[in-house]
Length: 361
Image (tube, rainbow, N blue to C red; front, side, top):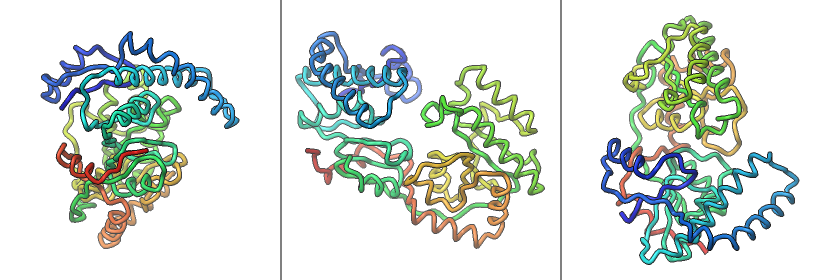
């Protein structure tokens, strides 16, 4: 490993990041750096003015005018990217392979382009599910979490090549318990609705499941709600507001220190549109999507046969799963379309897939 580059808007100092890497992942000895510097920033100015002008022309030609806050955020990312580009060209020794955990924004894409021009191959190790046509990655290899996403981006003119690490199909294990499990992630900062009514959607998802439980005679007490772990790091006011609303619905509040639930222990596993849907499928469960809003087209969620927008439909969907043969058939069909990938892979797995990736022009 050459270095771990910290990208994006600085949220903590490098010393704090090293301590976190050491305490949580045992990577305290790994060199950490930010691809920025005063010299690189000064060298990037001529190109930056050109990028600003070209970007402005492109945006105006679309007829869409972003909010001024969004334009400032875009310009900031471009500044980071142009500086990172200049920084990379200053390096005297560079690795042959660069692996990205996050890319597709102006700052990462400009750096990635500089690395490819220097002869390095880049890999986007995708940590979530594709958002569809609105995402454009420029890596030589896009390594996805499921075959559906690899196929989708293989049809787009972005990655040099796409792939995924296939997972053996497990035995269907759904519907063994009496309780219902609801997994939510609208309050996650990476959710596309975060900052756009995400907290209301989090509450709406719990309300929908609670109403379905009452209509089905299961009762609210048999509904187990588990928000994404990042929920516990939200601002106190936001977290308390959601918990208060959920408490008023009569749903038991989750335990921040509680163990991760076993999907096989529940009659029904519901989740909001997120990577968790594929995680549930990968363990042999049949997830039911709870989506109180319209979903983007051409995403993996279109493959899920049980995707409900109201409590009545949700209750009917869970009722269908009481027939084990029906549920098992739906699981088999969904597995064939989604093709979940391995939950964890190593550097050797990535290197093996990279051998067949062609360098981008």
